[in-house]
Image 1 (tube, rainbow, N blue to C red):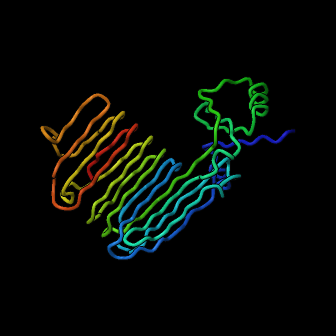
Image 2 (image 1 turned 45 degrees about the vertical axis):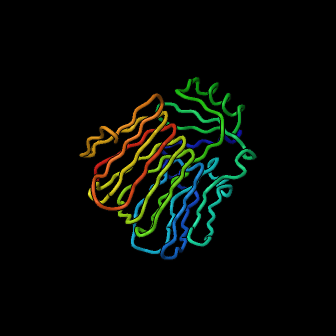
Image 3 (image 1 turned 180 degrees about the vertical axis):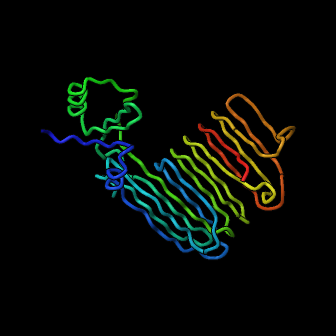
Length: 245
């Protein structure tokens, strides 16, 4: 029987075999700014800690583990900045997959022949079908609380929890969203904006007057709720969520 590559979301044993673990520590010096830039991770979880280093842990699965090495995590220190980048520079050269969803399960086929054979043998239709690279990257990042931090994601969601930053923090996603849980008493200035998404908030802040700008395809919120650094959250095409900590 011809080999059929299946990746099913509920099969935790299979998932663990098809992932590469990430564990990277990047030292930083006092007074430096931390710049983080990522393209394809679906989820980037960011939190503060007391150490003078950036710790990145997580998992990478590209095409069921076959192309995990294509994800590159690099860093360099230049003067008063530390630049950390995670990317798949040769993604256009990687093989593509057919991904379907059926009854809540994710199934990945290597090629059209396997896809058509599965449909014929099982006599099923699918809720969703897509053709492209099967990329599943989730990163957990701890950043020094005493350093200015700029986080940029192209396609993924930036989730921020347990923030204790004493310096300015900026989180931006182009196509994903930004989800931030914050203690407003520790934030001197709060800014959030989106062009094509929505901003949702359960904070005890009434955004109005100069603190609320609404135009076609653009929304901005601004407030000075407490004492501390400036927090800025932005998504061009996704949503921004501001939650009580």
